[in-house]
Image 1 (spheres, one colour):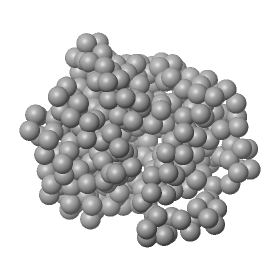
Image 2: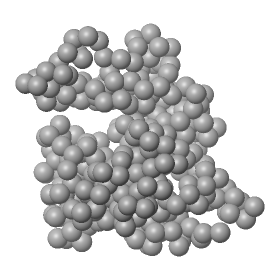
Image 3: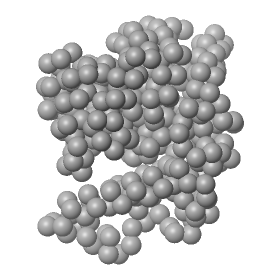
Length: 325
């Protein structure tokens, strides 16, 4: 049995259980992070969940005053995030414990963060990019597999984790395919150095999204998750509600044409991203089923809306049950 506190992520951050409550656009908030830290895990919030950089700084300060454990901020590090540089400066000034980078080169983030002792974990979906970010000085890899929610990878964890462990020397934190403690143990036994788990925490008391969104995560399961390109231009996992079935999951001919035009591609991607984010924002806080809700296959394990402390304690219990069986 591998004791949770001996797993690499636990040692890196000084936590009891090697799990990050994953950063989820519009869902993650400071209440969720505080609850995760109090439960012996950690968590991260997308910087873009705050409309202004002042709100981001305020949230970081409030979390630090509420708990002493580690937490992180997720940064989109490509040109679609117009606030990236300001967000990075705030994370460094406030010295969050770690930054998770997505959708771009983490080179600048790593340089600035390491200068003030902030760790950087980078989203990767293949070994080629993983080796690049390791060479840039990343502290860990977030291995996003095809079982993940949101912008999933293309490779199963069964293939992705072993090749990353073989080709890279930094810790590999697996994202996707884990919804309970039994699956958590299986993933660690498979070689993962930690876990990033998101979708199962949408249906938590602390999440600030609508009760309808939370209940959808209870009512639907892994077979109800489909990929759509309508939100950001990049395939994203959503719950296949009757509304999603009606509007479809593929971009129309004009959207596809603009997405391929060399001169317009960058601007259309940014437009698609912003339009998709507004659609998600409306959905997350709306009280109607005429919406698009992001979630991953791990909602299969969600049976009720519960406090995060209860969810994490159950995950720990199930982990130990599998370890001792």
